[in-house]
Image (tube, rainbow, N blue to C red; front, top):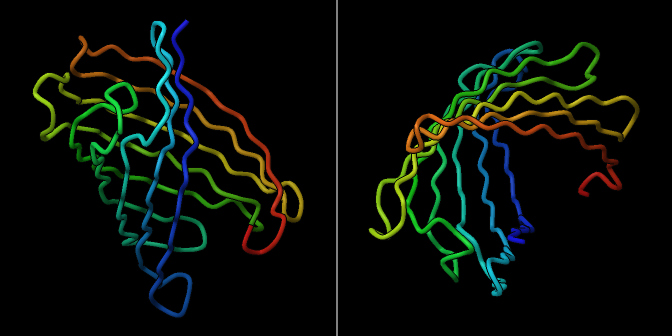
Length: 177
């Protein structure tokens, strides 16, 4: 009977330097603001969840391959204890990216480890490794198909590993949407 739903408001910004693709480097900046609803027992809470921000550096980018590295930070901003984890977290990551021929999409594997560095002493510590292979394929103009998987190894819970898979499809409505 327990459930958790999230609407994530996300802003991504890509800043590239250099004037030719093979010589470009740059940054990817992201902010996630989750609006969360959680039902636990007989109580339902709705409000702000923990905010996530990341800064990634792209030290190598060519037509076939890119490498991305950086870190994320989780801010314990939840408006109720059931809406977030109550811990400050750092989340270093590394992502090799392979671009598909003829601009048909890309494939990447994200390796990211979330570690708590502070926060509520009455909340459990966090140390979890996420590995996410993701395929973004462009079958036709303005269409995107995504297939992804995720493994999460919880180093705080006897190295327990769980998995999920996902599939999505979408269409670009306008150049900005």
